[in-house]
Image 1: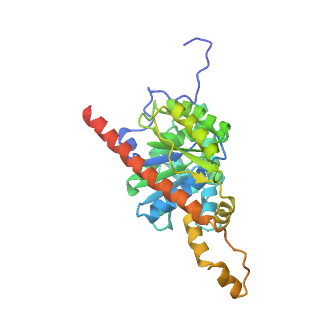
Image 2: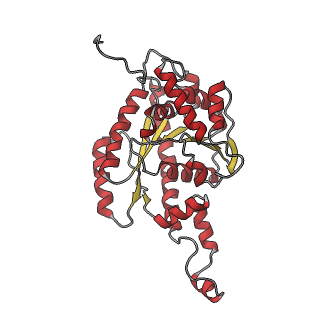
Image 3: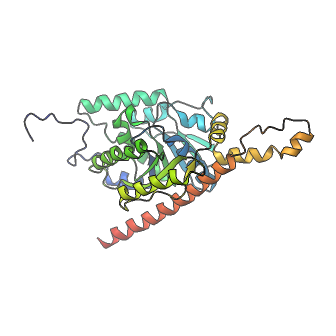
Length: 328
């Protein structure tokens, strides 16, 4: 190294064993939802996938690593007295204890919340790293203590401008990455910064891989708007991961209704059906204007298709990984 070069305190060195092999094995069904660009629907993807998978019989944990705590808003428990706003994960990391998630936010779905305590944890890890401390990998070590209680763990991450250190911590704790992005150049270019972070993290977590890319906020019926990003992504990904066929359309009214009501899209769609048809509301003297967005079913179908495709890809990748390991 050139004597004038200042060492990067945030670089992950192979010389340091941050996470044990047993912890990495326990975390093999952990998926981090992230991208190098904000505003790409990470929390919406996380909460909708989690609720659908839990309803399908999987035991699921959401880890909200964003200090905004939007997972609680999306799932309707932000004002619940149980919402500890990130205190559970902060406490587990600080005192090297077993994390205690909120149980059964939906049947089969637990949550480690985000909030102000998450921000304190970000600051602590950042400061510790600057001092050359030993906190790197602390999220992975904490989650490994409870990972075997779940079929899947989904980690929602903060925007990268909130600090790459915390995004790295999420990737250190994961086996797979889902990258949602909008069909626009700035969002697609966010994959470059994500690729750079993956390369750095792989020195400490050699198993981390991109599971796939999700097109989010696609205008309905805009075939050309969707096709060009798919072509570009196909070239840039070079076959290392798919851009999922299922996409999340830009259904503004349904997305807003779901968020205000603390529901996943398929839960909102079920309530829309309970409104009754137009003629029935009109005859009863109620307003003929739908109380809830009728487009909820379209949004729900998008997430259902995506969940199915992700599970299929996850199983295929796991089989390929096991086959490769068996040949060595």
